[in-house]
Image (cartoon, rainbow, N blue to C red; front, side):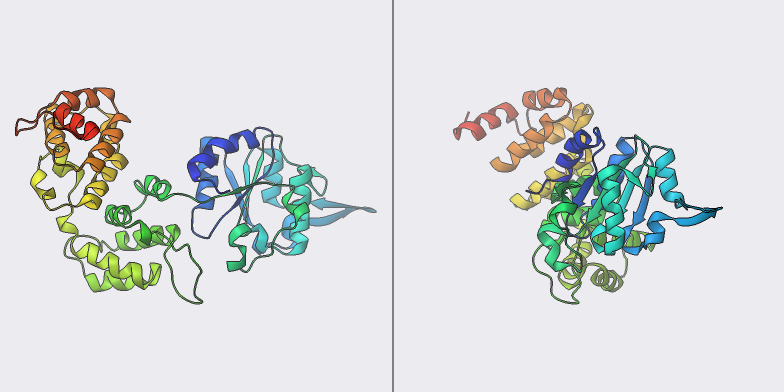
Length: 354
């Protein structure tokens, strides 16, 4: 059974606490490397990364030297570092490595040593592969039972919310808003047609870097260029949808429009999906973690009273995850039309007018 990144980050410390190696399996571009680096940052450990797919036996074991009639091995610099200081030793693409290299890693995961050199007691071993359930879609060598038995295996299937949480501080806001409202375009999860370009979490990040660097998401940018670049990174279907989204982006409603400016009329033609996307945007910005001003509370009350029941309760739940004073203040608020928020909540819960 697959786990999301939040679950992975919460449970993997129990494995590393007893110094067992961790294998992360999942589709390409979902953020396997990112989650390893996130764990390392949480553990305050540097990462020593090596692509097993690019290694030979010499890259793994090092080179021999002789002293009289005795031959000894000199470990490569990266492995010597992992033996002398605590690090996260991250071996990527292990299932694309040669059999000889994988046999060496076999000993490393089983005994925490290689060619007579022992890892530092606090060094942790992580690896990432595309195998497992999705292995048939990739040119990889599947791991046999004895090899897998040396690893603690986590199949990861991150949620859209995992990516949105990470992307809040890492990709352009236009791309974030697009994915927030168009979850289906984040990544392709079905079978892949040969040579066709598909979106992935990684490709959206790369596209964001490209478009941001060229300021192509600023108002008045060339939409043709935006489309052509997007098509190159994430494929035709996502590119068409994203181009249309960018063209109409100036009509997007922001959190500030509602809370700070009270421009509730901008949502007059919103459907449930539009309101849900705006509430998700509020959640992602963590705006409710701090205390709202009286003006912001009034604006929020006016907006809350316009919401259909499903979205209103979703907003109430999101509000409850932040400062409790905001929940109390909203519950006590009255809209500018004279309706009480508390009364509307009773209607939502009972289906009867208060």
